[in-house]
Figure 1 (cartoon, rainbow, N blue to C red):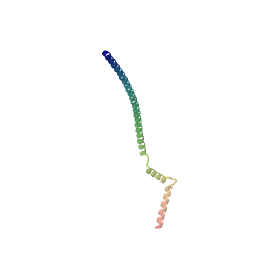
Figure 2: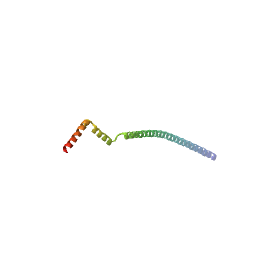
Figure 3: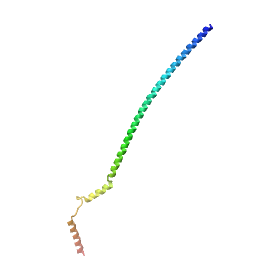
Figure 4: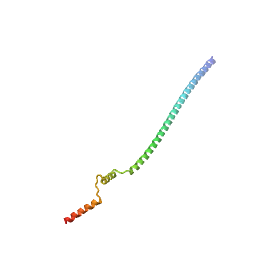
Length: 128
């Protein structure tokens, strides 16, 4: 009987050990599945992050190109602006045009000048 009890103990231990092994195997499979899922999520997020980073780099490149183009346009406009007359210069030109405008100004002929000079000279002689 002692052998029978010992056999039962051995069978019970084997059954208990088999149950524990199955539980450990199930736990191992669950952990492997969780690790696999976690790895897939990390890879998915890594891929999304890489795509977003690439898009951002493209946008930064576009912005740099636009900035360079704007800088070139600003320099071009500055060069053109240097060639334009200033407001003061424009006013001076306007004043000269007003002075030279035949509608507003009266010009005398050479003959009229000679007559005026003769009259003034005559007045001077008469007053002496």
